[in-house]
Image (cartoon, rainbow, N blue to C red):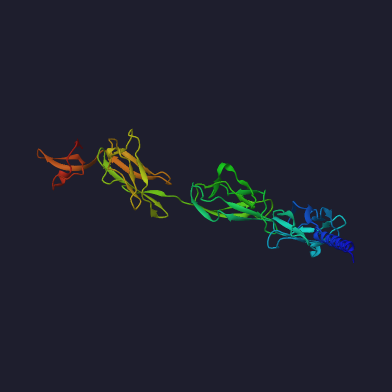
Length: 387
């Protein structure tokens, strides 16, 4: 073989190798598969009722619909808000346009918002459908707060009354008007602030009353919460008697006009039979235009001790004879204590005495001060009247 032929063969071999190398250096590009939610998301349905529209997902390859592809629709666990597909069929096959349509989807009995996903082979991405199960019509109302409780008469209860409205599946129902009703005011009862006795349930199905205040009558009673013809929810409330004040010392008593009474006035404040300390008691005497008296130093208040007893300053009768009542009161305490007092201008006794050899009968004023041992010396006369 000559040299020229040999070179030609080598060139051919080189070209063949180059061609084969160029052919093998390229690789085919894999298609891009995607799944998207087309419709059926964002629906609101009533619990236990089918949603209006099915869930629809589209599968594409490099933007072109893929037919004959299986799509799996997956709802959350039934322990929470979720739903079920008719006949348990949660798979669908795409049509010529790459569209897969789910079976009828029905909300379960639990209210709430959740997400259903759609997936297919060939891609790790999923399509998402946000759905909401709403509660059904109100089926029951129940008291959930503010019962039982008690408050002192004319005072506010600590907690407002709360009632929850639920549907037949015990789901809370929002936007429901609840009416709270207290008994007539002729007995133990109470009133709502501003006279507002209605409230609307919130997203949790809860209706909260306005502040409730006990009336002035002690005793137990029931406030109801109602919605339409549903059986009412009951709240057990009790108005308890507040502190009471009573006259416990220095009454009744009598003294001569312009003289101090022998005993100081005492009033006792109790609650539930137990003395209440630290309460300021005000003693009030009648106007000085009639039978009355004054307290030493003009001090007419006293504070109850550990036993609930308030003791007045010394009380002195004024110059007008007669019977009257001094009152004792305290803020926030029910009742008024009355202490009976009496002032007299003098008590006279008949005294037989000897004068100028004859006996005469005299009326002499009896005073409290003894000046000697003889009976007549009890009777230091202020004036004499011959009988």
